[in-house]
Length: 415
Image (tube, rainbow, N blue to C red; front, side):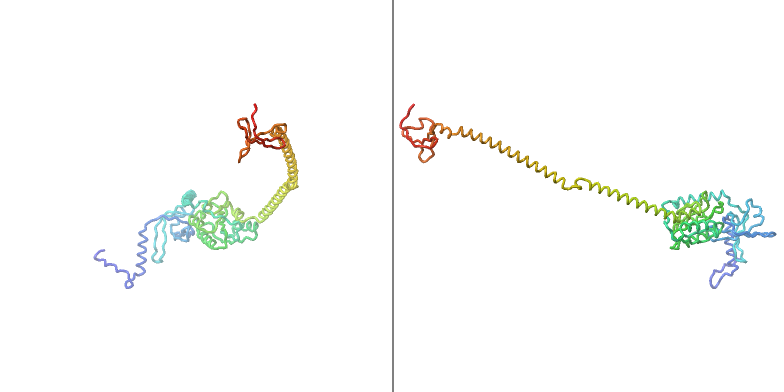
């Protein structure tokens, strides 16, 4: 600041800035940004013959934001790749703020079309990023309901994909309800519209599953379905999402983050909606198989019961008792016979012993003429005399013979 320049007055309610000052300051701030590279999708081209300026609109494919662009018509005409609406481009230029209209635009001096190789490389880098974050993890996949009552369908208006999904689903299960949300499925406005439809269907508690369907197309046509914002929105959904984009060879990133990938829209309808005829046939088959299994089980159990009833112990329960009764009778008879024989043998032995005892006993000896001489002991039992020395003269004796006993006295001895 020089002495000739007065100090700028501070901005306040008493010292407000005029519009021109604000516009000049904004223009100065934007001018200090310098030249920049910007990527986006061309949504509008206005290049009238004979004019020195062409007007374009550059839109972000992920969000509903756009930027006015101006350039020389020759820049569009001399581009090696034709620049058309929907082309993804990289522009080099400088932002300009038009203070008179209060608008902002990008004045570009170079435009590069994003080729297929670059698009595929970007998709591959995004694929690696999402995979590293675990968004492709099979454990995150939500199971589809067996019989959805209401299906949310996001597809293009009056598209073949819509006809295929609706016709196949209603043919397989006529009672199914389909909530169709039309959205642009290619171009710069596709991603915002698809995100809005996806958010609305996910917030509806009556929707059991969401199908994202589109027919085949080029890499540029299917590019919205590899958008990072759309992929993260699919992962964040609480409702199962089925991706049915393109044909079998096509594989946008939405196929990897969705809960189920279908090869075609028709395949999506077949995998989401069960076939009523096939399910009824399966029910009939299962009923027939269960009835057959039950009958087989009953026959098997009846056979087991018949075998048990045919067993002797059940067919004639008293047969074993009768057989045991006969055996007991036989054993009792044998026991009586053995006891009688034992008693007879013991009786015979006893008789023999008695006979021998009788023969050898003193009574038999006395009966043959012998006598037993005992000395009478006063106050005691008689004692048998075995020698002459035991009976001196005068000894009182008791002489026992076969039929009785007599008393005697020793009168003398003889040898």
